[in-house]
Structures are given as C-alpha cells and as structure tokens.
Image 1 (tube, rainbow, N blue to C red):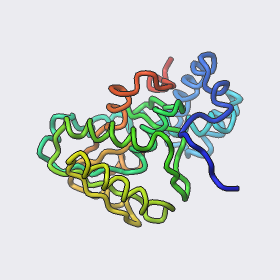
Image 2 (image 1 turned 180 degrees about the vertical axis):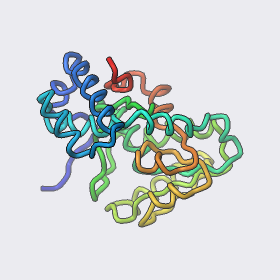
Image 3 (image 1 turned 90 degrees about the horizontal axis):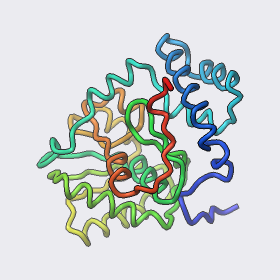
Amino acid sequence: MPDRRQHRGPHPEDERLFSADATPVLRRACGDLAMLLGKGYAEKSSLALVGDHFALAARQRVALMRAACSDAARDARRARMAQMQSLRGAQLLLDGYNVLTTVEAALGGGVILACRDGSFRDMASVHGTYRKVSETIPALELVGTALAAIGPAECLWYLDSPVSNSGRLKVLMDETAAAHGWPWRVETVTDPDRRLSRSEACVATSDSAILDRCRSWLNLARAVVDQSAPGAWIVDLESSDA
C-alpha cells in the first residue's frame, strides 16, 4: 500500500499512550530503565523487564528506549553539548533526517520526547523511505533561520543515500538554501553515522550512538522546537526520577 501521509503527526493511539495520566508512569519506568542500564544490564532484557513491570504497550517501550540512558551516558553527553554561540564562524555537520524529522513531527503535532540527556527525539523515524510532508518546507525554513542566527561558516548536511527519496530531499534543501542565501552543502552518503561520529567538527543530532562517540554536539532540534513550535506535544521524560 502506498504511503499517502500528508503530515508527520501522531499515531492514532498516542493520545492514550502518552496522555497526562500515562506520563508519570512512563517517567518512573524511564528512571528504572536508566538504573538498570547504569548497572550494565543489556538493553533488550532491561526494556522487557521494565515494560512488563509497568504493563507498557509496544509504542511506549519504544519511547522509553529512546528517552532513557544511564546516568554516566547522560552526564557524558551533556558535557559534550556545545553552546550555540560557539558555532559562529565554525563548520557544523548536521544529521539530516534526525534533525529534520524531529522538527517536522513537532510542527505536525507528533509526540516529541524530552529525553534524559537533554535532547528532543521524535517517534516518527525514517525506515527505508522518506516522504515529504506538509511540514517539510516550514521545518527547513525554521532550522535555516535558527542556523542563520547562530552564524556558522558552513553547514554540511548528511542524508542517508540508502533511504529512498534522499536525492529529491537534497534538491529541495539546496533550493531552499539558495533562496535564502544560507551557506549549506547537502551530501547523500552511505555512512553518515560513521562520518558524524568521527568528525572533529560539531554535530547537530540527537542520535544516541553518535552522541556517545562524537567530539561535540549541538542540541539544534530542541532549540528550534523550543523557540519556534510553542504548541509542540512534549512528553517530558527528562526528569525520570519523578
């Protein structure tokens, strides 16, 4: 069946799964999962144990896995988080789909997780195919405006070339940048995670695997959502000891 979605919006069950009543339970579960991860237990078994204990649905378990990390990982990631003003005149690398889909989801009314490491993560990950939605161009323009205010010398976006429609998105991003005079380069590559993880430049991402290996990172998606999407649906799992 073809994908005819027009928005990067919520799942039909999200209103129930991430309601005001459900959030305190998720917060406690996130704290328990973080504790187990901190003790060195495997992610899969820890998630199963916590999910079963709190009787969580599959989608809630996905949210926990995205939001939780050990205290040590949280502290290390936060220590490497760059300040916006430090990027003026520097090169910034961007994890293209990671940044873009988070802002799209925020604009589209999807669930945005405030995670233990301070990042925002969405629940609408790209799996093999990217589809342009109504929020795509507004999201690009909001990110571009935020980047222009920061003033990096160059913004190098990486898109996963194995993801379908990456070439089309690159053209759209190139056109958007040219229209505004933004110093962007967009590359489609097979290994963006490896490039971002090993770069000496600061990286805009919330991908946990990259955050654990990169030299420094910019919490760009959160900054854009905080500033430009005041009505976004934020599920707060950041303070998971509640």
